[in-house]
Image (cartoon, rainbow, N blue to C red; front, top):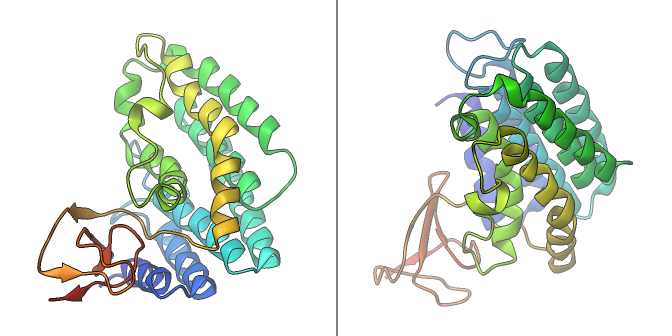
Amino acid sequence: MPAKNRHYRGAVEALANREYERAGDCYTRSGWATLADPREGLDPFSIDENGWVGRGLQALTAAVVAYRVAGRPERATDRAREGVAVASDFATTADRPVQAACLREFVADFRLTGGLDGPSEAYQEVETSYEAAANTVEQPQSSATTPLFEAAAGTLKQVARGTANGEIAVRWEDLHGSDPSRAGSFLAHRAQFKRQRFASLLEQTLSEGYLAAPRGTTEYGNEQYQCPSCHADDVNWTGESVLCLRCSTPMRRE
């Protein structure tokens, strides 16, 4: 198993056991492993058309949140600063303006999740970047479904589902504008939504001291499993773990 997958699996296991600092460590290792080798045959210092390096940046943002939930804000700050540096570097070298804008979205995410200065201003700059990139984008829906853009939404969705009883709390229509023919505003809505909602969702997560595992394959009402904590029988298969959809506790097979 590639190191990045092994470390990601460790992060999910740590979340399930409420070992949030260890989760942060595993997410960090997964992130660096992915950035070093984003996809077979790809140059780790350039952005391919799918933007696979986004998966590494997503892991680092998850690490930032996990450290903060663990009560280790200094480690979260350090990781966020690292993430800002890496994402900013990628943004300056990206050939496609829309990908550069998405990488700046990651910069804003690191600023917000790490408690750094200027997240609101950073998101406003992202909106401007998406608007400026509009003329270079023929199908914004296609851009928004690439690994880079999906990764940029991943940690937000993970944080949000922990505040929503494990359900999907941030959907496609929440993140994107209603008119894809207006590519700039369609994509800029991502930054607007994050600027308006991400901070409050993160604050609730920190207040509750609970970060949900990422959502994988799910099934409702599976009588073969029961959660020993909340007694739910709704299952989340993620990172090779079988977890409660509701509270991310390892499920007990009946």
